[in-house]
Image 1: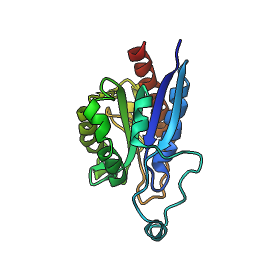
Image 2: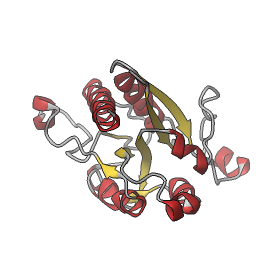
Image 3: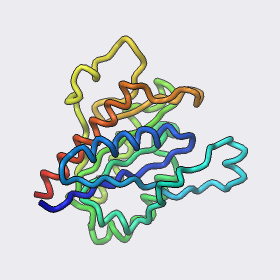
Image 4: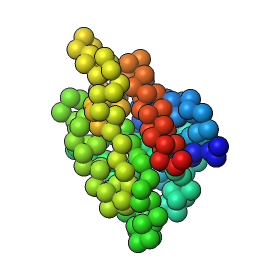
Length: 203
C-alpha cells in the first residue's frame, strides 16, 4: 500500500502549539502506512520584536514550508495560536500566499484538521477553528472535526481543558501554563483520526 502523507503545518510563538503539533505527529504516525511531517510557517516578526517579546528560538528540527509544498500532502492538520478569535497573522499571511494553489484548486478534496492555543476561556477555543474553516473552504479542502469521538475526555469537568468538537486545543494562560496530559491525549487522538480519514480517502 502506498504511503499517505500528512503535513502538520503550524505557527508557534511561545511553544504551546509546537508541543501540541509534536503530539499530533505522533498520533498520525501511529497509523500504518502514514508518514506525518512537521512544518512551520514563516515568521513575519523581526528578530528585534521577537527578542522584546521574549519569544524562545524556533525549533531547529522543523523546516519552514513554502505554499507550493502543500500540494505534496494527502492531508493536513493546521495549528496556530488565537489572536482575538482568529488565527495568528503569520498563518493568515501563509494562507494568503497560497493563491496559485487556489487558482488550480490543487488542494480540493484533501482532508484537513485544525488545532490551536488560546490564552483563556474567552480566547476562542471554538471561534478560532470556526473562523479558520474559511481558508479550507476556499481551497475545497474537506474539514475534519473530531466531534465527540474522543470519548469521555470531551466531557471532563474536573480540570481546565482546551479543545472542542472542532479539534484539539490548549490554554496558555499568561504563557506559563503548558498543555496538560489530557490535552496532549486529545492532540494524539486528533493526529490519528485525521490520518485515518486521509488514508481512507486516498485508497
